Every structure is written in structure tokens, then in C-alpha cells.
Image 1 (cartoon, one colour):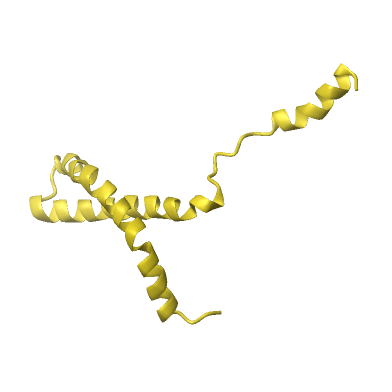
Image 2 (cartoon, rainbow, N blue to C red):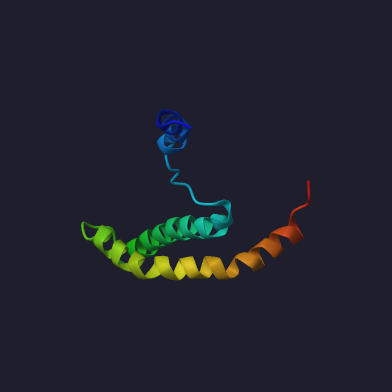
Length: 95
């Protein structure tokens, strides 16, 4: 094999872009992250707005509450996932 042939065979692998996507085995963790992030932000906004009113300081107060709520929500979603899957299996007919 010449040097030129080696470069041609190695080039396609080197030019392929790296994928930023996670492996499929991380699906439950990715789901828990996005679910907890969205739900915690929405709940923080509603609860903080209802308790302290809607004014110019609302975004700062929501982010302050979110800093605690999001990690807690993430752990909770990971913990209750097995129970939720069982409850869904009990209530939804199989295709």
C-alpha cells in the first residue's frame, strides 16, 4: 500500500463529523433532564408569580427558585420513572 492509497482510505473516516447525540442507552436520563427542566421552570414561574406578584423582579426570583427546584426535579423524575412506567402499563392497552 502506497502512502497515497493510505490517505485515500483513511480520509472518509477522518472527514465524518462527530455526532453530538447521546447513545440510545441514555434515553431515560435525557428524558428526565428535559422533563424536569421544563416542568421545574414552569412551576417556579407560576408559583413565584402567584406568591410574590408579577413585576420587574419576577425573572430573578424565578431563576433563584429554579436553581433549587431543577436538580430536585431531575432526581425525582429519575426515581419515579420505574413506578410511572408500571402505572402506564397498567392503564394503557397494548397495540
